[in-house]
Length: 260
Length: 358
Image 1: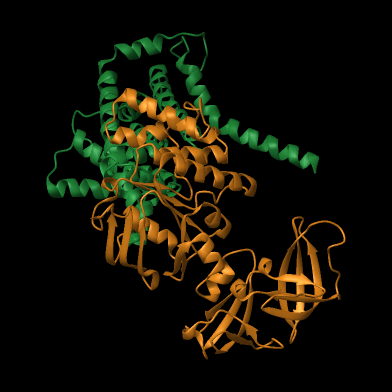
Image 2: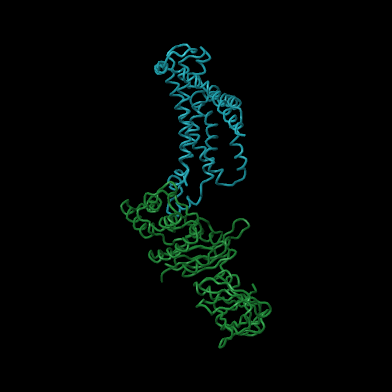
């Protein structure tokens, strides 16, 4: 049995390596001093400095960041309202809404994106920043609601009642007691919504308008145009780093945020 | 005349099919320690929540210090509530928890600090201001919850089985502590519990509840010695003997399983209706030969249990009727053995006749 255990462990390890090898290679080659992708000639930051001088990259980064920030705010506010309603109140149709909240997670993103595009034509909404935000908020709010729901489910109503007996009105109770207790969940939901929006390609591709480029879009278009280049490796590594950072912070706050 | 601290007039509350409070009326005097005592599910917590404004009664009136507050929202009632699960704020430290009510009242920062400090001293938690809630023991949390409700000086403090989560030893100590604190702060306390010992030890007066109704209100001793119905007689106190029968004429009770009629206090209203004779085990005397008592019955010892301060005997008398008797232990050679023939007896005022027809 011991041998079997060991074999299983090694197998899991190998799978992880196979999965991450391409990413590791990409990261490694982003620090390659040679222009060739096939040969590692020494450590260098030249592709990163080249990246910093590229104005298109700056604009794309600005676009990605601002749209993700707006998406995050919209998603968290919507999710907070939605999750609160679902967990605290029992009402007709509640369980139906509960099920529908999860559906955007399993709908193929391309289907959803196409549907959204058709709707944008239909209502005549110009494509650009706000159409991208709208598209991202649909999944952002869903994922944020799922994260918050778990947090609210463990929330004890008596804590709010205690605040009320101590002279706090509903608004004071929400901002001084409810929200601070839910805060780790709110932060986790916000980081998740931000990361998803920052990384998104399909929906952005469908809903963006002329001139509105995000990081995933320029990564794709430059890859499609000229194949892989060290500069592209650097850009992808940068984008990968941001996602990893946000996910790490999210896991950390979730772990730290458990009271008792 | 000073108005009563709390007055409930015909308060009813139902949750769907369940009637939690069925036409409840009572008053609590100022600075009184008042207990709502009853088995779980009797509606006592609902009553408390109605007083706090956390539930809205379907009908009836609630008054605090003479003013009708039935429709006043919780945060404007100036009523403190210690919750069963304590409901401390996990995102704040001890100071933050206790200061919360004062901050809501916009008390100056300096005074908040002073009052929180005084309160912590009162309950023996000096110096723990900066502790997080999860770093405290059960008993300490208990005290923090109490401080938090007391420090804003509520007109009435409501306590919803706050000792429920503690183990028995700390529980007994907290019981005495609560009573001491209540006397020191001179406030009206309404205490909800299913533990009759707690209620008896702490309360000035007790209201016994059953199935959404108030069964009896009175001082601890009165409820203990003069329960109004068989439910209360058996619910209060460690044990009670209930003997079924009927009063054939005023002052004479004929028990179904008793050999002979026994003398009881004469009550006109209880003649010829189903009744029970209720007598506490410690009110019955035992000896080989008894004299000068209103009622003396022959009995046989059927079980002996030594409880330290007293012996708990079961005596068989009449038609296999088992009577519990507690006899204080006063040293060796004073006890009886199983199968000993003895006499048990009591005076008429030791027993109570209760109507058992509802």
